Image 1: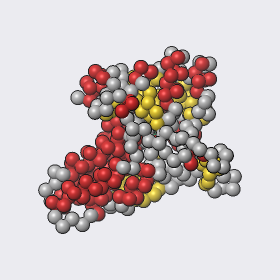
Image 2: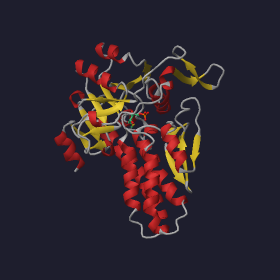
Image 3: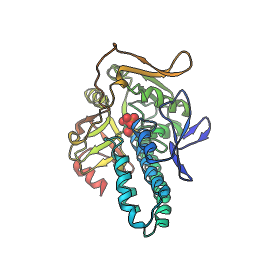
Image 4: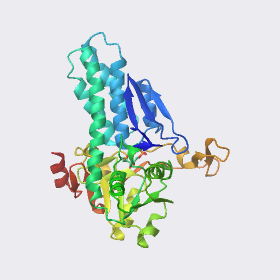
Length: 356
Ligand code: MRU
């Protein structure tokens, strides 16, 4: 992705240090943070310095790699037990996005093949970079397939942020939009603000502005109004996990948008890298939905008039809130899953075919 004219990935590793764009501060401040050990990796995912399923996955892959590179192994026979500890720590950071577990598993399986400590350390660098490159490639392909469903003049609704920052680069839901825009199509994006963490109004709007793609931020409750009035003609969102039956888990509020789109005969597409499709989970109801701290709902965060980054209370003192981070959209509301291998119907048959 280009930010202020410079090319970036959301996360990368150099000489055993992990670098990431701090997404908590976007769009008010552009800051690269460094992670030096597994505890910092864990906190960066849990606190959402990095967020978005593929970006979390790549961070986890680099986290496992970094731990192996930095650890002083007496012998290669100690690698297995050490990997058990590191992988369990990283996996406990957030429960919902499939990519986190997929990435840890990819690293764990690959590293266990090493025959010496030296080989394990080399493999750690290679595997984690491969993981990130595969993810970028998948996003580009999703963009190319997704571009085909976008007509010149499309008015797209998106929820949360499934752009370049949510991935390693390129994005999932925003990838088709970027490609269509690059090809000269006239594309307009309605951006749900996505309370409580405002990934839409902060991060999606930031990315679209950087790309020069026209957009309007809308309040979370406004999408139904624009759909009924014919101002939105397609919805594209990302996903954290797709179940075997085609149910999709994504940012809280996605379900409502899907139901309203269905009611208004508006196509509702989910961009889903194969790494997010979990054939071991039968339905959406079997997916663990993360419930985050109530503070995120009780307060709003952003740039204060005095120029500092801070929070304001938007609830009574002592107020109580519930804060599920994701919801399940049943497959019947979904027009298609846009994967790196093509667009499929959200059915068990199609999902098993594309994953084979
Ligand atoms: O809580 P977040 O910001 O990590 O949630 C992100 C989403 O729900 C995205 O839509 C999803 O991870 C897909 S990102 C390509």
